[in-house]
Length: 276
Image 1 (cartoon, rainbow, N blue to C red):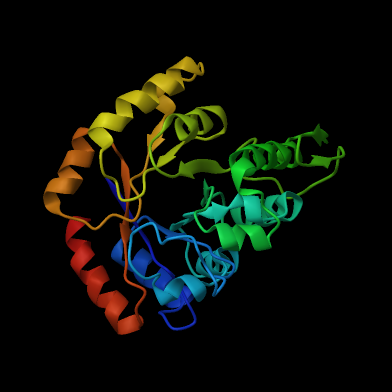
Image 2 (tube, rainbow, N blue to C red):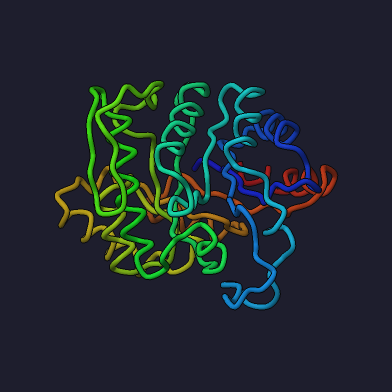
């Protein structure tokens, strides 16, 4: 099983360069980074995990800039987002960022995408909350048009692009590896089956019950279940938990690191190395 990590990198934590080098030297498979552009002070949306919102949410580094630094100092470390808030980004600009990072890293990028939870943050980006899933679907289709081998136009409900020259292209034909993050449910599973390579189940709980449901949705969409990728995300590890994932056929797991300074992060990395 491949062991990757995720962390809220901020202006107060270990740097992307230092972390990436340490991960590759230790044999970890990848680094996934979350994104929040800002956190409005006046917020009615509750923190999904309960309690007060941790301060690192308002200090998060831009994931593409940080992953670009990580790419430049590594050769084999896989790089991903967990998750990119596609609804909050201009899809033409985002398509360029993704393709550039994937190209420069030699095809090491995974696009983990999601729909968000902070209504106030999304509203500042002009996102209508009730239609955010449809907006993400539309923007994914627009980006795929820009990533196509030949100039391809796209006109959707929320955006359009003329047939264009748009290089570089992602290293893999059509799109980089794409995983959808979020809680199990019919809407999310329909999205995974329609335009992704798999699912990022946050926390990795309840997979025994949810995986058969996702596999049915995947097969109903005419896709080969052998191609479905499940990557438990932001997991706090335990030997029994990882063994359970292996029994389910899961080949990659993303462990949660604390948003700490270099000393604190490296201490936890040494503990996690026992799972490699």
